[in-house]
Length: 479
Ligand SMILES: Nc1ncnc2c1ncn2[C@@H]1O[C@H](COP(=O)(O)OP(=O)(O)OP(=O)(O)O)[C@@H](O)[C@H]1O
Image (cartoon, rainbow, N blue to C red; front, side, top):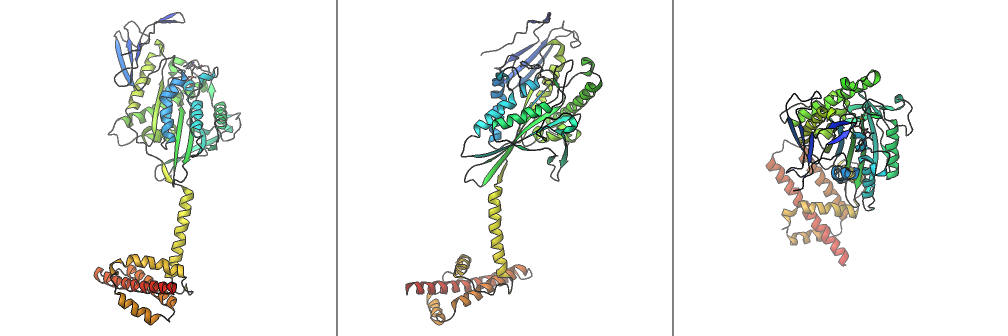
């Protein structure tokens, strides 16, 4: 068994960093991350004891991992299921400055530093190139800053102030579905258009210089790709959405020494992450009747991703230096809780609206025809031959039990009525049939025995008429 142990004996800024963690990617159940803190590392963390913490995850990546590998192992399976019609979410969570934005969006220096979002767009449009399947993609980009929602794409222009952006509010319908009012959906037909929307949104994001990160993102951002897929000749349509979430980073206010605006932002960020944690804890405990989604905008928006109809992947980012050990362990604890949540993704399939409309129009037309026949005095003209034939087919099927009718009897009738207006005759019968059936349906007071007796009498009569009609038609054709 190949075991990859990361050796962390390394000098950083002149200080010795002890080996406090190890990664085992060949653990029996996925991968494990183990912290072994020696007693002499104090840093306000260990209390003169050696401590071990072991966490198991699907994958554990070290700081030298390539962006491509992260995409392949974490994002690609989710995108594949989104393309198949399921909802998906990938969200990055972690302490400030640990690489969430780098993982989700990427670095600007090298092309290979592209993060999950641009790689997702490339992969997605590559998959949707199949001309046989009709795909439509729309994009929305929501920012949650200080507990307020903003549309990062609404203006399709660069915003100079936060107030230039459209405010997004949350609404809940009677079925408890969440709707985001004022969040625009931008159609994007190819990768280039989608990337332009991503760049525009990233320019509009609130970013500030903090002691922990030179370009700290001060808000939670949710980049959503909405997909509609229709296969030719298929009566159904699939619609799914993929949320790509870059959460703002948590930070210890006392440790980072923030003040003013940065302090206010940090308080909002920490509070919303605290509510997120509460939701995760409630979801991981199976007997909890209430999940406190409504406590914050973030948990309300991510409600479906956290415990509903969605395939969700969480990427936790941690710092590997001793100074942030406590935060790293706390991030792992949180991730472990998220890992035990069971979501229930379902295929989002609906009847194609165009086909549904055609089908409903046909049904309305049939009902109109039926109504005009039933309504007295509405139809004075005679039934056409096609109409008679159509009704006779229905009666024929209804009267199946009476198919033993005597042929001799029918021949006598044909002989008698040969010179009468057979159309008028059948027309009258059909009206009588419909009225009587209708009347029987309405008269609830008629007992079942009598009802079936009358019904079978009428049906046999019409069966008889239909025989006459067919024999006559046959006689006309043969002569
Ligand atoms: N794997 C990596 N390789 C190279 N540089 C990285 C990597 N991860 C992060 N960085 C760099 O570390 C810095 C902080 O990363 P980033 O801004 O992504 O952190 P963050 O978790 O999003 O922080 P915040 O929560 O404050 O927004 C950036 O300069 C980024 O380029």
